[in-house]
Length: 567
Image 1 (tube, helix red, strand yellow):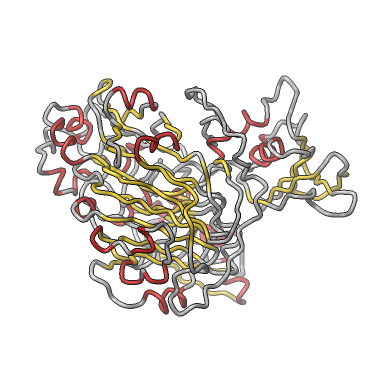
Image 2 (cartoon, one colour; image 1 turned 90 degrees about the vertical axis):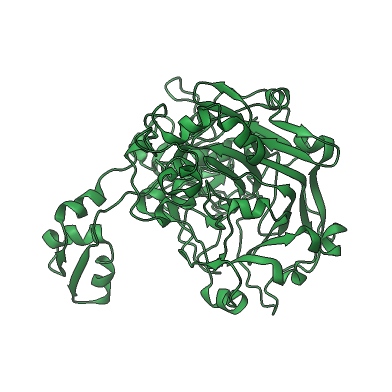
């Protein structure tokens, strides 16, 4: 879970085909193997172990963390090891409740439209998720889920029509044998009660994101100026967040709710800044920490800037902090995710975008706007943003400036991401160089060129609807899939003395024997984490384009009372 499988060898195929169409059939190594036996159009002779090829076809979805391997340092990095390595939701219609869902049927409105007024076609991972969208949309009576993931909502006056491969159904299933639409889409864990602000609108009716090319010479986005729209700072900093308590990284962390986090000193307010750190041991092999999700979400297509002004960020052996954006209206990664800062142990942070489709970065624009060498620049990584860790799809990560967590901790300032319909730019602005426009809450990113660390321009044709409204996430994890899995190759980890034969590096299936977990559980780590593993933050702010009167949106997680979607 959370890591791609390893093939064990490099497979070479010699293909003899009769047409371009036949060549397209042979692009997949898996398909090529079947075509050896089944098609006269494609004759493939391969040099490698047959067992290695067959192993690639094995079902990896049930694999435990301890079964995972890495074929290279890059595969063991952030993209392949982080929490969002969830299983892809099944779209098999045979598993749907027949008494409620209708196979090979879709609905149209009386005027011939495929969607009801005020809604748009969206992309979701399953029919159950499409039904959940319908249940949450006023006036929706039917949903139609298409084989490409398209979800269309229609009203009570819509009529049914036949079409092979489509699944349709009502807004909810009332039969006793079928759970409610919400239960079908996610399995709740009991969070503390959340009072939802009625002024925050739903994100489910938001139009899909359309990509627009930035034709400016500065390549810093579509909007010249922005205004303050949201702020978390000072004594009210933690009022803007949900506190999630579930850890999905096989880690040595115990995420606390807000009350317990204050009581145990994991979070603190100091007037003009706040601390978010790692606390004491709360249970065997676990230490206290927090995972924060903002209650609000913002639309990438209309544009926004998120900026964290910090004095210190966590770093060190076993430490896995993250400052990132994601959508919780649909199952990950279909709503999009942007990693602004994330790293583990002494590895470097990598800016990465994840989505559930073959969204490509605009290579021409990337070369035009970010082609010059900068100190610390590394890469490039994948240009396809599609993410499925079981198929070794890791998201897109262009050539960029990469620094370690310790470097960021010793170089305070502002970490900012500018996201609009043309793409994303990420910046690190040193504290002594913060420009007046940002200090006065009227940022103009076209003047920030020398501080840009990453640039992700989206392709107009392939990235349509690749991201939905984004919420901010801030957390400090310990050990687990990345920090624990990469323990053996970390110099910082080796300096702790917790190495083989004293313990087993990366043994996530047996936490009591895992080196990283043993270090976290030891008394010697108390002062280590206290001096390194904490955020010291002045503020996190969100800015929207000046002059735009945009509605305030509640994140999907917040509108569901803190209940996460489950596949």
